[in-house]
Amino acid sequence: MTPLDKASLRSMILHAAGVLLMVAGIGLAAMTDYGLINYRLIANRHGGETTDLGSNANVQAGPHGHMARIVGTISVPTPVVDPEFNLHVETPVLIRHVEMFEWREIRVGGDTNYDLDWVDHPLNARTFERPAGHANPPGFPLDKKQFDADIVRIDGFRLSPELVKGLPGSSVVPPDMKALPANLSASFGLYKNYLTTSAQPANPKLGDVRVSWEQIPLRKMTVFARVNGDRLIPASDASDGKGFDIEVGEVPMLDMLPDLPSPPEFVLFRRITAVVLAALGAMILLIVRRRRRDPLVALGLGAMAVGVISAVLWLGHDTWTMAAWMLFAVLGMALAVSRIRGAARAALH
Image 1 (cartoon, rainbow, N blue to C red):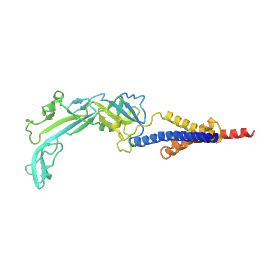
Image 2 (cartoon, rainbow, N blue to C red; image 1 turned 180 degrees about the horizontal axis):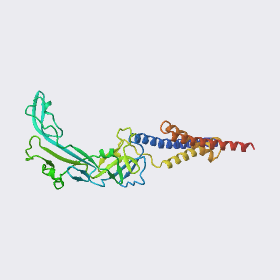
Image 3 (cartoon, rainbow, N blue to C red; image 1 turned 60 degrees about the vertical axis):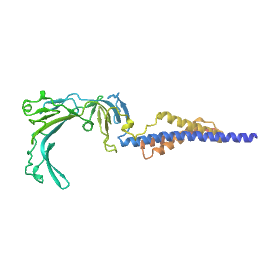
Image 4 (cartoon, rainbow, N blue to C red; image 1 turned 135 degrees about the vertical axis):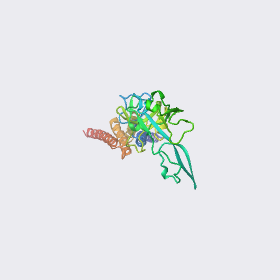
């Protein structure tokens, strides 16, 4: 092989290496920004940027405005009270159920039957097909009610009323006969987990009433919601239509948001590496094509290439990020042009 052929081969190898380095830098920048864009698009469906605080949530260091996953045991500073029954329960939500033993009309096909059963609302016998002999009492002596705690917390964060209503799970609350007011203790007796007016609870009669309670138990839960100071609130702008999620126990972020990809790691390092790779490629190409060694020109060209590609990717997704990358590209171009002009003027003198 002649010296000319060797020089030509060396030039081709260097040229290919320069192109590959520039493509690698541009590709790394594109992959990083594409990953961020994809992450943000899917995160926005659930309320925006997410932070996994886990079981070590810190209110002072909470990411204000971000969606956060927090694991902890639900707590209330004071018990919830059903004042009519003097029932005190440490729970976020206490629900009183009231039922009456009434006639029900059951229609199956063309047959109409009647039986007595516990029902949680008054049934008007006048609407029955055969009301005679199936009259029900005109109303309930007590109303069903729900009592909510004034403050509900998880790891120091307060839950908004919307989140309190979304707390999952329930358990039965046994009645407390000792705390029952005298007027009600004369009317109600304890049967299983009910208070009932029936003289024979196993064989109730028409018009008998029974009362029971259920609660949201204080247990470990995983909450995914927006941080607003020391409060957790739903994300009103979430396109998933809910803006929060609450699960019993410790549930990983991936299980709560299975469609959410992991964001790229070491973003700043990847971006710097992308510019350096593109600049090295540009440096090699400058040496091969123009016999010029100017690291600042190469750096400017590398910054311009990475900046333009990244700006195009962010177009339509984030105006400020797109503008920042475009400015970065313009500054890179300005650096390269100024160095080339400076060298040209120096050559003339």
